[in-house]
Figure 1 (cartoon, rainbow, N blue to C red):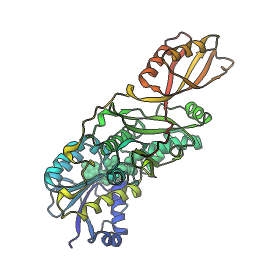
Figure 2 (cartoon, rainbow, N blue to C red):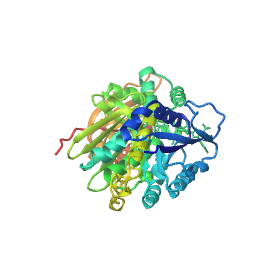
Figure 3 (spheres, protein in one colour):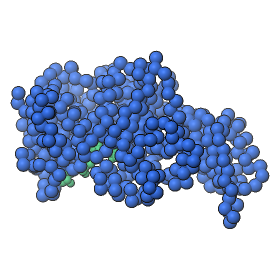
Figure 4 (cartoon, helix red, strand yellow):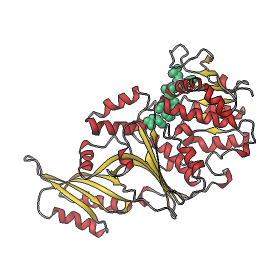
Length: 441
Ligand code: NAP
Ligand code: HSE
């Protein structure tokens, strides 16, 4: 059989690793799929820059438009990032009948609905495994491995940079900016690292996971998003003392009322596996009716793991390139005409336990005022601790853990407590997840 011909747009961290992997494991790849895969063309912004891969067999160009219309390319692999030029190029590639592989979760989360519709019309495949959780084959696991299950929840650490920063700060006491700079150097971070630390990257990934888990169109704008930049060392230490660990989680849940999608720092009991996922590692926890709870773990960023996912998608497409398009696994796990528009609920609708930290005047009656507000809103306290004020300070710090309650009630309580004249400044609120294991059916 003829080789499958690849054109790669972008030879940075992921692109170079993809080329290297295709070269290094060429024999086993052709043994697996029954034909060889060759990168014939690649496009970069600056062709004079040295690359971390062998370019001797590759025609290197600076204009990516030449690749998407090239008659001798079967699969376009988009590894340049961004959602402007990348979108145009992918649209052109699809219109020209090329199959597409991308690691660009922003592109899929924000424009996937239209790209998949266009690809369906053209009968071409789109692979995007590399977009979520790096080296963990989580798209395949949910879309194919759990295809018989009703999935009710997907939650996880889905940004390697953020987890690397939180781990290094907690374990080694390193400064935020210093660890972020290292993550950039290691090739983990996005071109704009605010995507990592403000939760936008995790929101992109969560929108994709929710879509394939629940059979809904991509809804990036519906994801409630908080980053890790406002976390303080004080809260990280308090969480540890209380037996919890703070992780930056993406959580998608389905209930009878609808779907909630959220990304935020979360306290998790230290005994949970997911609380012990450190560094650049990611973990995704899925709850489904037949399996119950399953957890998927692996490196969430970096050239090797991401390149591995890119190559897996290339091989999947290469295997079925001559087959009837109807026989392929649907882009978003369900047939395009079977996607549900389930209601997307606001963050106020979630139910969660909460960690609160506040500063109050060190005087009699303050605690009673606070607990009355909570009691009136049926918010029950699991633990409460007050630290003595420093000699030159008249404010005591109160730390509280609550039982589960709706976010609407908690927000109301926080507003009322902050309005008390005995309370100093804003209350810090962090959601708490216990992940109580449910039995499979
Ligand atoms: P990167 O290292 O910055 O590489 C981007 C590549 O795209 C560079 O080779 C760059 O060329 C090329 N490029 C940019 N604009 C171009 C243009 N207008 N025309 C032609 N080439 C252009 O980025 P990366 O980390 O590999 O990430 C690539 C994609 O993978 C992104 O969508 C990212 O979100 C995704 N991703 C990354 C990781 C990771 O761990 N890094 C993991 C999962 C997904 P020059 O080198 O000449 O500048
Ligand atoms: N910047 C992303 C992360 C790359 O750190 O998780 C992997 O998607």
